[in-house]
Image (cartoon, rainbow, N blue to C red; front, side, top):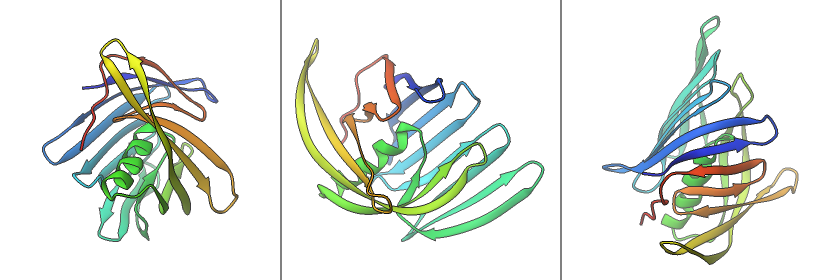
Length: 193
């Protein structure tokens, strides 16, 4: 079960995470040094069936329901509101979501796809739905003490702005992404089918 630490460089925050395959899919949990908690559960096709993101004042709980994403967003002072949007899942600044989306493309046998997602951002977890183009740019093998480590490089293009970023994925662990550094990994990634 991979356990480790990511550093969010822009805000100098640490995200302590662990992830593991489960009976019907995969689960990623994390806690950041600013108090943000993430719990992401996917099914065997890597659909985000249960998502919970909690900041010190706001929370979001939701998941994929057929062709839509449904969620409830709330805060102690303001109550809660239900939302729904035609999308494939959620995206936040936690690397766990990069893993889930990339693996869903692999499971579907796609090297590239336009993916509509609900992006949760900021301390209030504001939601914005947009479409990004995801593309598997290539796979390389890196030698390690325990044998070769296959690393996939994904390119993500924001279709609204044309901005392109890339990240590197080994199994169910993001090795590097814009603004994210993997600083500690206590066990090898899971390579799930």
